[in-house]
Image 1 (cartoon, rainbow, N blue to C red):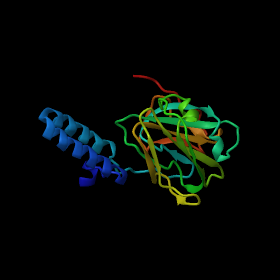
Image 2: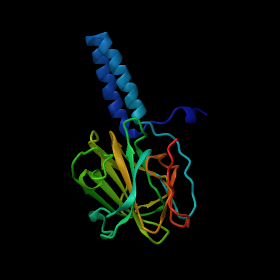
Image 3: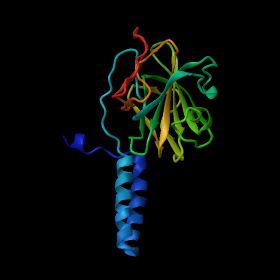
Length: 228
């Protein structure tokens, strides 16, 4: 029960929490009201770097959300050129992470890491589609058991200035496995074969490591959303 209530902290977050706490102590020494502002900021920092436990659905063909957030794109798009996946459009599912979402990233499928490619770029609002092409990013090519390669891309946002990726080329991975995070506010894109069925819809909230966003083996038509 304890691990359901208290989420672990990602290792990358402890130094930031320590910095926030030190600044808070200094603010209390300078002026107590400012110290309480520091307490709120420190608590937010702890919340930002939380790394909750997740239960990942497993079945051949399932594609799992790589991050918490809101789906902002389900449409054809050319994959990052640096991954060598060709120029033919693939199905791109884009997820925008705000400052209050869990920022730990998880792999959408099992497979082997074929290529890692870092691309320096801008820091546009990550909810915009052009952020996928113009922003700083870390692109990962993944060879899957479905006989097709897919891509998952960590994209820096308006505030984000640091992409963390712990993978290495040739590494064997499983669906839902943690592979990094983005500080602070960002986007995660998944590129899939155009013939695969998307199950996510624009505007939907997804949970990284748990929500099924596509299926390589499904025969159903794409879903549509209804606002209530």
